[in-house]
Image 1 (cartoon, rainbow, N blue to C red):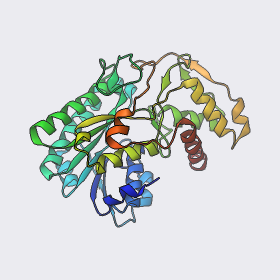
Image 2: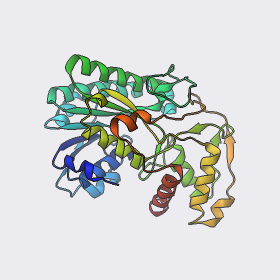
Image 3: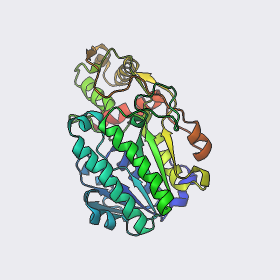
Amino acid sequence: MILDQFKKLKNKNVLVTGGAGFIGSNLVEALLEIDANVTCLDNFATGHKHNIEPFLANKNFKLIEGDIRDLDTCNLACEGQDFVLHQAALGSVPRSISDPITSNDVNVGGFLNMLVTARDAGVKRFIYAASSSTYGDSEALPKVEDKIGKPLSPYAITKYVNELYATIFHTTYALDSIGLRYFNVFGRRQDPNGAYAAVIPLFVKQFMKHQSPVINGDGSYSRDFTYIDNVVQMNLLAIITENKDALNQVYNTAVGDRTTLVQLTDLLKKHLSTFDPSISKVEISHGPNRKGDIPHSLASVEKARKLLNYKPTHGIDAGIEEAVEWYWNNLK
């Protein structure tokens, strides 16, 4: 997956906040393969130490256990860094509806701490995890970066505020940044446990136990499910780009295709059945639609193709095949 074009990051100092999480740990792994010097900042609220355990013996890896809500910790983490990949956040629309204060403290207050300390440390570029939730109630498809609607959840508000703050820090303090609006990312190391587990790892776990997954609604809602390797590529491209027009922008980080929840369960059953044929007979259940959910999500990735030279490597089928194999080997 790691292309020669990213080898220029060898010996560069890169901070990955939330580096013990699903996306963060995959970024850490990719950066270490390129021989970058990687600092991981994580408080393990949603990340896991087992995600970074393979990296602890690597001389190019450093772990700082701390919280982005603490300014001193952020200052320590940003010291000497060339680039920041800011992944630390409290995800999940339902979580933000249940506890909007903590989501705001982490996603807005923590984000601002990171911007301030990155600015003060002279970081060259600040790349951050934005979200497709920013599109809110906009019904336009595909989603194009400069056309958004009103937010539908506290989480969506926090992620939109991130974009606004990043813009102000460029115009006011000349801190270059790139925001990546993630669309339903999935893949290895995504946690299948907990009240706010994402749909793909949750369904995989349930199928493996021969339990019936519950689809919210009739299953016609659709998403632009995006495999982790595509997301890693986007982050690395955001670091290395020398295109000045590409900076201080937000980009859809997706495939540019959509899959309904019914189609998703069919794909999961197909690939899991290669390991356990009886999974093909597991029935699907249906529940009520979830508050704050948008019916359909489909990204245009033309802006990323044009300005960042983004070339997604995995569509939904290839991504599910790889993800299922990882879960089969790691969940049992």
